[in-house]
Length: 405
Ligand code: MN
Ligand code: MN
Image (tube, rainbow, N blue to C red; front, side, top):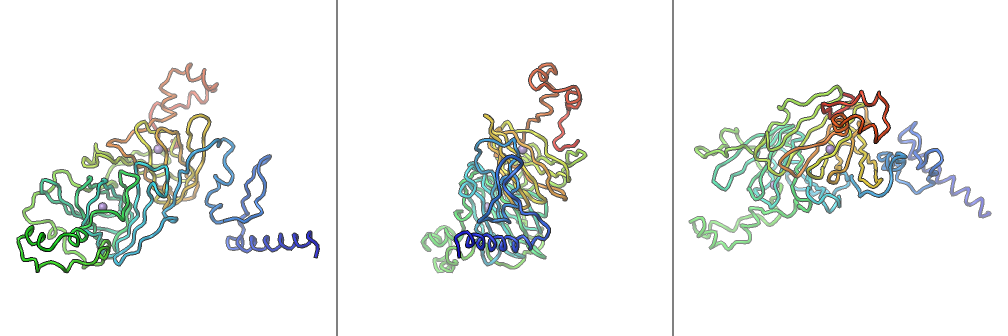
């Protein structure tokens, strides 16, 4: 066999493998890293499934240029910690290097499953994705908090405030936790059982005013963390009788807020102006209908950490000095926009796109490119961009976060 014919055979068999992989998604063309005049085919090896999910990395828009850090990490690529009462996984600065001031955790509690009584150095903000849960906490003044939360509800526990979460019936809960520290580690929190295990029984006896023989049955370290327990009784019964409630609740009904609505979507903004305890995290829940787009904008206060709840999108990020890069996202992905960088988020699917914009800030703020140009003397704008009258007339003095407006 000649070298040439061996090469032909190899090419045929590799082609056959590709055809088999492609056959699973019948009718779909194999994407190639090329556009007219640039690039070429990719003979392999290839991870076609991932390349199909990242069309704007494989074939970037011609306007992309230069180097930006990675601005996407999927929870699907994160290690899952399986526990007896549910599971958890995290996307932190360790997974998404650029994310220095926010970390996210995706957690599932089965019906009755308890996230053990604990506290941590970071503040915790949460969005309920599925089911319902009971949350408990106290504040340093000895005031108590117990509430039930359902889909679209939030909670916020300030740094150091002790709390618990328990999945309710019929099928527990799934939620997103957002922490105001990119280095946060869900595997490194202050657990009540951990402290009991590492305190001499005679000290516990003195502290609680009971015999030392009352202690010593605390489970092994790590045995609780997320563990099964009986479903709790009615909420009223769990609210400690006679205990003074915290003055500002640690929970908030985000979906009860009247959204800002445009023709192509909605925006709900929750920051400390409507949810007073949430002093370090501000959020926007954005819905974009098919064909719509979160307009070109940036944030004048801090970085943006995103969580994609539903649908699929692409985000283009502009980083000054000619740098621009486009990333693709779908449900379960985390996105990131470094401080002050311009960006848009376009719905590239055929269902409603829903995502959260999160900020380590007491307040939400954005600057609209369109509104900026509309509120600047027109001759000054025209002198920059050589725009025709049609564009100048279309500029909107009123902010329209989701377009077409
Ligand atoms: Mn916590
Ligand atoms: Mn934004």
